[in-house]
Image (tube, rainbow, N blue to C red; front, side, top):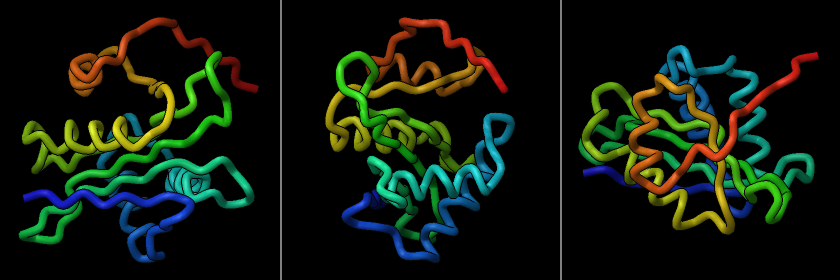
Amino acid sequence: MIQINTYSAQNKAPENTKKEIIDFLFESLDQYGDPKEDIEKCLDYAFGKDDKPGGLVISAIDAETQKMAGAVIINKTGMNGYIPENILVYIATDKDFRGKGVGKKMMQTAIDLSEGDMALHCEPDNPAKFLYEKLGFTSKYLEMRLKK
């Protein structure tokens, strides 16, 4: 049985849970991950720190073992219409829970609780791409970036 917890600017995660989410994402994202400092910035943004627009944080906990099975961070973009109102920045499922519907449950919770459209970036070879397409995400654009 998986328990889904949701956090936001109005319902911030306790400090120990915040650290657990950061550590979990850092370890579970593999080649798709970022440094812990960047994950923490994203989490702080979702919690509305420094007057940021906020977002949504979801954790999935195995009720039997109390082990984190997954986590999601969605940030509000502060845009409306011409750019989706939300961006899914991080999602990861623990390797022991992959293929058991945890990612789908977290994504459906994120979709249900987010107001407005949602965007995400996904590498073409990411196995989660199939899940995103199944949930209705489409590839409308090719993303290009300029790094300064």
